[in-house]
Amino acid sequence: MDKLIIKGGKELFGSVEIGGAKNAAVAVLPAAIMASKSICVIDNIPEIEDIQCEERIIESLGCKITRVKNSVTIDSTMLKSVKADTDDVRKMRASYYLIGALLGRFKKASVELPGGCPIGVRPIDQHIKGFEALGARVNIEHGTIIVEADRLIGTNIYFDVVSVGATINVMLAATLAEGTTVLENAAKEPHVVDVANFLNTMGANIKGAGTDVIRIVGVKELIGCNYSVIPDQIEAGTYMVAAAACGGSVTINNVIPKHLESISAKLVEMGAEVIELDDSVTVKSKKNLKGVNIKTLPYPGFPTDVQQPMSTLLCVSQGRSIINESIFECRFKHIDELKKMGAHIKVEGRIAIIDGVKKLTGAVVKASDLRAGAAMVIAGLIAEGSTEVTSIEHIDRGYPHIENKFKALGADIVRASQD
Image 1 (tube, one colour):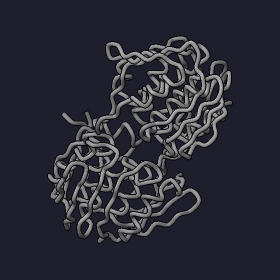
Image 2: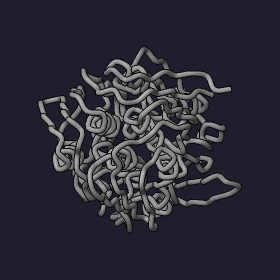
Image 3: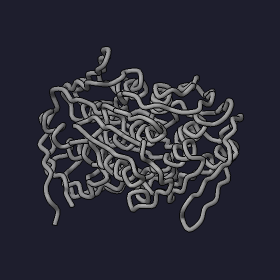
Image 4: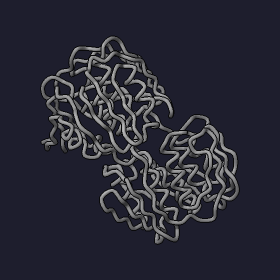
């Protein structure tokens, strides 16, 4: 087990390169196994633990995977197993995308129910609703979801709640269904659009991704292709928040500025300067920022995955800030860790009330989940003295080489073994 040791108080200067979007890549890789007669070469795949985990899962089904730096080649021509039941499946939330991919290609799938970060209840009822609407039979036995269909028939499906996972999963299955499927109240996140674009590159017929109505005309087969995953909106947002919190000037490269508009708007409202170019944003800050109110919402609203890093910045911003976490009910587990460092925060259900303090002080803190880990790293960067962040295996699930990237910006941060 490793930990991060951070000596805070240093301003950040320079530039950082953002990797491929984790939330897109973990869906694109399962989608690639739907190409039955040729290979897929996918670029800009992030070097993170979740991707390595998913690659092992896909290999266990009989696919051949070759990785060269950030490029992954998937040969699924010999894929025959529809049963995913390894330890990796059980610990990774996004493994449920295998259900839609296998159901589309083979009309059956058997996947153990996945885990993931403990950030609240994330049921798969909308996934099941979609599969059943397409004509599949769904059973859950001994912790495994078993989905089978004689035929998949296109239909109209209205999601009761906006769900990224259900939108993508049902879209995967519907791509190889007979006739037309219309998904209403669909998620509009950039990674939903990216998965649709990838499937279209493979020969699918999907229109409307990025809106709340997606129309899918089923095709008979998908073929391999070359594709590059979009930049990671959440990794970019995290470095933007860190730059604002630490002060200085940081250019975040390889981004799509439009995907970051809700984050940029809040930083500007707080008093930071955000400069947008075609594929980069620069954040300049002299600290002394003012508090703001935030409500997390589905895209294009403020992303729940940036709420935790943002809460650290609000801890040292002037005045009172209020965070309304409307997406996940257990996304304040990092608050107790921030309090150890001197933060003044009161939590009432899904509302966090933050009164800014002049400084945080270093402490030994824990990364309770992926984005909470990023929040604690930012806390360490701005705190007085030394901070140790433990349980950083959570951070490694979504932030490639985080200590090296911050070190290149001038931070005093090292990775060390934890006894």
